[in-house]
Length: 153
Image 1 (cartoon, one colour):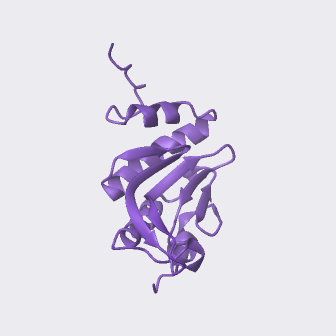
Image 2 (spheres, helix red, strand yellow):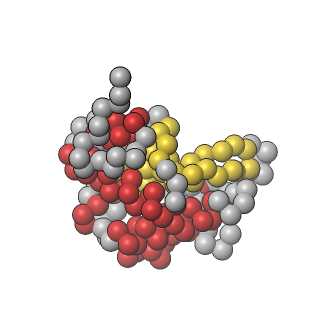
Image 3 (cartoon, one colour):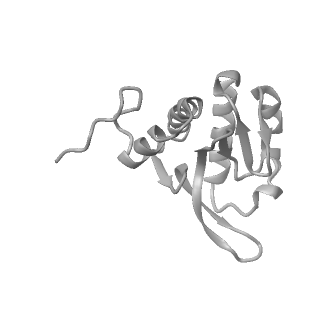
């Protein structure tokens, strides 16, 4: 028995679990934005998407904190939530302050960028933010928590 074909607006080379997850997103705008984020993050990271529960990740990075805690996590990631799409910036949003000022409508948390409508943000700026975070996180073992990230570190 062969796997079913993905819908026409989902890239055919997506892993089946990622495609099914995106197509199951209930809100049409969130589903549309998830498709956009899939393409953007795959393009800027050069990595395929991998499903981590309800988070879609791209690539891996190694972290090790001064406390000795260490592990691996997705180097770029997003999650389509009911109220907004969340882009995870594990190097901290402060590291991207200049670009965030040019992005368009958004909210932030310590390591989260909340986007309600990707059609209202500058996707080139979003791509730069994701690419910069990805490069910073994958340049070696990352030693800072999101709340401690800054462009100087």
